[in-house]
Length: 390
Image (tube, rainbow, N blue to C red; front, side, top):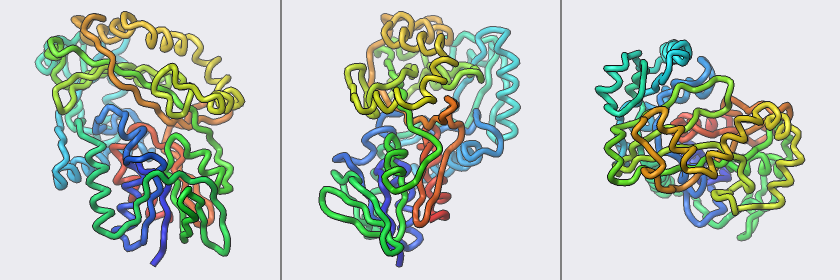
């Protein structure tokens, strides 16, 4: 029986560990924080994505469609709250219509249930929306991803896995065909290693002797919520038509399971890999970003967009104006600050963002080096894929 050590206790690491345990491996999970789902998993929008945006044939496209079904089924089987509510992607002007039609074609290519609808039909779903047309995506849902993690932990405990919190990887070496991971509690020896360290995945890979082709650059996504008296402005999920020349989707509105409505996220460079506020600054992390040539190449390419994102971060009025393109009744007075998340975005030295999931391997090692959204949706599928590589 193999012994496999998994570094990272977010939803991807736990899903990989659960799949390995189900296949009969002895699993050790190392998580540096004091609880599971502490970072990306616990700070995201809790949306079960449909697989709408991704290049046909890519890992993201294939795993999102399969993951949408498997994650929803897992939640229902284990009593995790989930609601398949669908979403609207809305064109707010005629010049967005060609991109909306292209998105409908991509949905069809990816096997995503989606339908182009008129402005009047869009307002049947969302009475306050501003739209000249929309794409109705039926399989999108909302879920409690930390609760999914709790269910995965329960499975792992039931299969005898060794789960260790407060256990960062301090050093990694290979000796005699086995991998050794130093932790504050001692050395863990295993036959194989899986790196699902998210925001620190590139550093863990380098620690293990790999030279990953991408570097993690952290982007903070900030959220607001609608005040309770304004929540009726949004019934479900309302997204803009994405601009393919820009790296992120743009701010959107999401009604959560508890009835709150989240607005966001924007995208600004985080000054710490786990920097959820402007005042969270790590000189070492800032120096890493500054030394990486891809950062400056990306900044030159998207200088105006980056400046707009920073201004929107600093101005509730600007944030509200972006939302008002989708729902004109939203004003700055309707918004109250909510939490933020940090996206672990892999970037290449030429400044391009890694678009698909990125998984690299070495002898006895598998490293998940790019798993931002929709990785939570795809977690069970990523788990099966990675377990097959170990």
